[in-house]
Image (cartoon, rainbow, N blue to C red; front, side, top):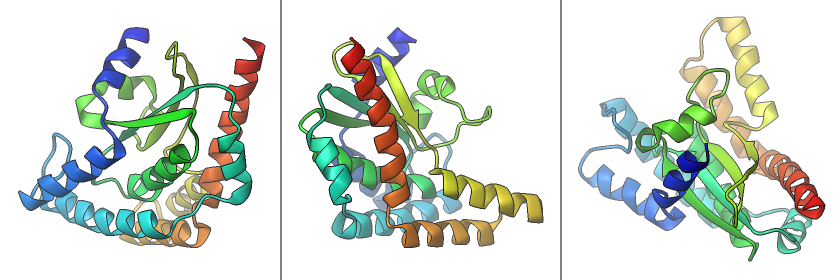
Length: 206
C-alpha cells in the first residue's frame, strides 16, 4: 500500500489543475477518464456548471471552519475523482473549500482511471465508486481515514430508490442532485470533520 500511496500522491494534481484539465478536454469534446462517450461529455459539462456554482456560493459552517483552523496534525487530502462524476461535482469543491481553510491541509486530486492501484485499495462494496477522500499523515503518508463516495443520507436515498424501483435511473440521479442542493454541503462537512477528529486523536497518541 505504501508504494501505491506514494506514487499516487506524486501523480496527483491541484484543484485548479483538475478544473483546468476538465475544461481543456471539454473544448476537445472529451471527458476525463479512459472511456469516452457523448453521455460522459454531457455529464462533464453539467458538472462544470455545478462546480462553478459551488465555488462561488458554498461556505463551510463556522463551527467546522474553526476546527479546521485549529488542527494539530499535518495532513494530505488525496481525492480520487473524475470530471464526469455527478457526486464528485457536488463534493470535491467542498473538500477544496475545507482544505483551503487550514494551513495544516494540502489537497490534491488523483484521476481514478490513471490510478487503478489506488482505487482498488478504496473500493466501496467492491465498486470503483468516486469521489473518495483519503486522509493521510502528511509526513508519513499513513492512511488515517477516508470519506465517500457520498454522505450517509445521500447513500441511503439511492439505496431506498433502488430497493423500490430496482434500478438507479435518471430520476434517481435528479433526486440525488436535489438532495445535494438542499443540504448545502453540511452533511459532507460534518462527516469529514468526524473523520478528522479521529485522525487528530491518532496524532495525539503519537
